[in-house]
Amino acid sequence: MSSKLIVQYFVEPDSAALARRAAEQFVEAAAGAAKTRGVARIAISGGSTPKAAFQLLADPAEPFRAAMPWEKLQLFWVDERAVPPTDADSNFRMTREALLDHVPLAPEQIHRMEGELDPEVAASRYESELRNSFRLEGAESPTFDLVALGMGDDGHTASLFPHTAAIHELGRLVTANHVPQKDTWRITLTWPVINHARQVFFLIGGEDKTERVKEVFLGPRDVESLPSQLIWPASGILTLFLDKAASVLLPAPDAAGRGVLERVR
Image 1 (tube, rainbow, N blue to C red):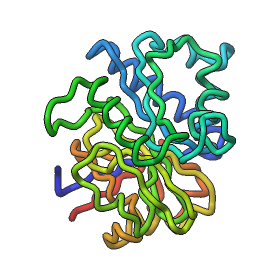
Image 2 (tube, rainbow, N blue to C red):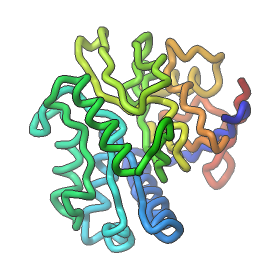
Image 3 (cartoon, rainbow, N blue to C red):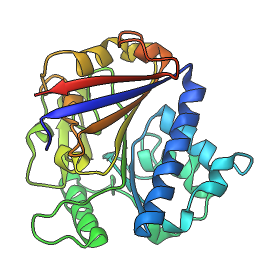
């Protein structure tokens, strides 16, 4: 993995524009992968911005639905809560209601984490799912075409929470993570898997993220407290899509709304 990271960031005026930008990126990544490799393997996260983006993708009145190569898409999840797929907290349920119920995806194209199972069992089964879907051998890691991440106001991403065991997991593709501060279990892709993707982006919105964005992307390296700093793609490029509120403590972007940071470790 590169010791230098280029962080390119794009600032949108509000949450609605951020969701639209996200929908554009999903389509662009999927179409490019489908054209180049015949399949688009995308791992998605939960949250309000992805939900709004999924609703745009599903809307027949929007251009995104017709542009998405649905028949070439293989959809995976970055993480999941330890709840059934019908639970209000389920990332799968949110995605199903916003997107899956409205678009032409066959069941075999949808690879959900089984949050209703014991977390360790669910993690092991999802790792097997990845190995089978990507036809992995030995210690190979899957190469997603896109991994879409969010960031919490505590600096977590995926279900890699501050001071939890998953931060130190290097040997597995998927792990169960106990999160004492939320008194819950999560199932999550490990950070080496995320970093192996061809493209990784964060969607970050809201003024409650402002200080944390500054700490993660401008501050000293402290992955125990700020697990989002573990995201350091092998490509050497990380992309952020932010609304104006989340971006105000970053250097001002150019007239086109783009900024660039350089991180070294």
